[in-house]
Image 1 (cartoon, rainbow, N blue to C red):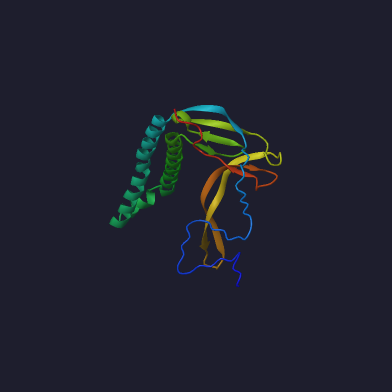
Image 2 (image 1 turned 90 degrees about the vertical axis):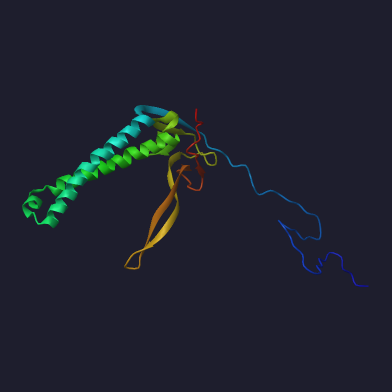
Amino acid sequence: MKVTNNQNNFNGTTNFNGPVQFVGGDIINESTDSKQDKVKYTPEPKWRSPFTLAVLSWISVIIGIFGLFPIGKILANELSFFKGNMQTVEQFPVQTYLMISIIFVLLFVLFFRLRRIAKKQIRVPLILNYAISGYDRRITLEKIHVDKCPQCGGKMKYYNKPVEWREIVRTDGSVKYEVTKKVPVLECRRNPKHCYEVDPAEDRVK
């Protein structure tokens, strides 16, 4: 008599959905997901700015309008060049207007980003454990006080950590890595593997 105990025989087609175990004895399942320790931090407001969402919106609009004037002057000078009015072109202070345009563009980008922070009411890391918060639709400068690392007791830092990159191949064949995504984290200074992602919208909106 042929013994077929502890053998798995499948006749025909068999479909399995989900994890499947084939064993000949007892089954012991142990979860590999352990509860991750959480690190605590406390934001301390250092400066509450007068920049609310409404104020930032108006400032962005005003900067955008005034920024059009130097750009318009530069375009008008280029038009004079094509018309053959060389005297006007030579007397035009193009570098001055170009510098003014760059300043307006930088200011517009700055206030537009601040407006985005206030609109979404999120917290964005800066440097040295400082952050900008848009909670209650107002820009506030905060100092982030972080407890010690729950795994080793080391000091923690709060910053934007790069988590995604893309490769850019240069003409000489070398590869440059450009960061495409950053996330706010609390990271141990002793061991960077002790890292905890922070929700930028953790504070509840009123």
